[in-house]
Length: 192
Length: 192
DNA sequence: CGTTTACACTAGCGCTTGCTTGGTTGACCT
DNA sequence: AGGTCAACCAAGCAAGCGCTAGTGTAAACG
Image (cartoon, rainbow over all chains, first blue to last red):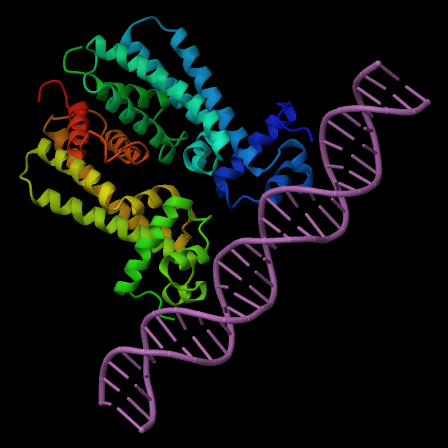
């Protein structure tokens, strides 16, 4: 068994698994379907992953790590203007939601299928990401750019953004930039 | 077979099914688990429902119908002030999300498990509900109470509200009324 | 050169799944 | 008393499930 490394082969298999998980859902995706998609036999799958659960964890882990690094990069690229930072975070969030769409949809829908161990590990990653949001929102609150309860505002914003995976069509006429701009405009306080 | 009626027995079974679907997810909930929860044997289940899918459809149908009627009642009870109507809708939405929590969680998470026929029927119900929101948002836009793109605003609002099922704790210190007030405040335009 | 390693295969075990079949029960109606 | 009917049960089928065991093979390594 070759389990628990992160070979490029495994990365690719993970990407393909994500697609199937989105199409069929985790439980309905059989190891035989996964193997076929990957061009191998079902038995060979367990050379790369300890069990089916681990494939799910790998998918979610990759998506969340990408989200985190994209958000960090976006924040570093902009100055300390609170509104600009809010905007950067919204844009970064929508960007991952598009490029790693499969992984994020899986994370949203199949989180509960994770066993305790994987859940604990991935919760940490997710918390780190949400902490980024809360920092930026705190800055905006302190500057008076937005108003309200920091906890509620951040939850509402995350909800609005994550919900986009259910209706947003990348081929449509609205760009991710449009969404980000509109969302921030919605948040902004009277005179800021 | 007794299929497709809406006897009180079936209503009760549907309610219990909703709870299990939330706990375990649709796919992981076996007909044997459902039967046990209902106090009957697995075979007897198919006296009330044609197949497992139909149980899912029944759960979602009930939740959506309740949401629709609660929202309609809430709108009838308030005058034509756009802000009050927004507020009433938000309160009604959170109210169903609490009283029919199980059904709505199932609707959010297991929608894709519906087959084409059930999906078509239930899409109609859901569209009717969303149309209610869009009307109220249009009124608020026309009155200048809020600003922005009607499509995006309504999607953002629905996202923020539906996302609450993932974090809101009814036992906590924040009331649904608090959430509704905060959300509407977040939407409101500079001078209105 | 011989050994190890990575990756894949075949074959199938043991179990669970959704659902069917054929029959029983007891309340109700005429 | 005889008939109806919803509600339930016992038993089990066919299919599919995750996963394992044991083997083959070609490249990489000492």
